[in-house]
Length: 359
Image (cartoon, rainbow, N blue to C red; front, top):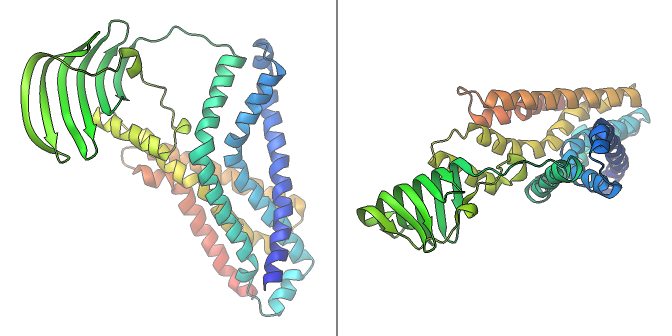
């Protein structure tokens, strides 16, 4: 049985690697051709363009891995089926589910690998792509903003929630500042206004609260103005461009909590967080859906490519539909983000169940 597993796995890995690298080259070249006019207009050097494509590579890999895995399954199992090798294995008492078990294991491995890349490499790669494209290639410059609304920021053990921040004048309005300890908030200021001074932030018209053992409040007092020792300067509180693709799950979760504290609608960020959990499992789910098609002895390479493209188009199209539906008030963000995975998994499970008749 181990020999059969190795044989099936080897038959799968070769087209997997070839399909992945072939599609990577095609996608990156298509990206280059699509943006060539802007690259020429920006007078970007060859090294900058190469860096841009290298940074874009892992970003596009998230979508290429499932398609490459599906193509590899269709090619490898289709060839084994046409050469009657799968028939011979089943004649020897091997269930078809057992034949494809190494491919399912690879689907799980690819999903875990994609998850790891999404949490480590992808945020950095997306930031690099944006910087290289906007700054190095297009050479976009703009006047720096100095006024911000609904700001959340953190300092040395301090968390700021600011309704309005004026960096140039060193002012803020509608502010909640929490000084955090190991068990939760220790000290909190709630103020209508704040003014930056050389000694730190001076707060006006607010309440000062004291805590111990986490959330247990031990006292509070109101003030017309009070001088704090908070050392974060106005420019330190400038919000970074919070793009979900540039954050991992932990950072995105923190961003959502800060939005909720400010009373800002966080549904879009919640949908993107669940999308980050749904996307990696596309490798396994698309394999489950595509494997039953591989047992057709008349299926050639052209049909395999057509099936792979059709499944990929349907899956990623439904993924975008689910993202849009998840933004609707009546749909839970989790349900929208996992719509494509749930539907394709159900269809794949039905097709897998019908494979029993082959044994």
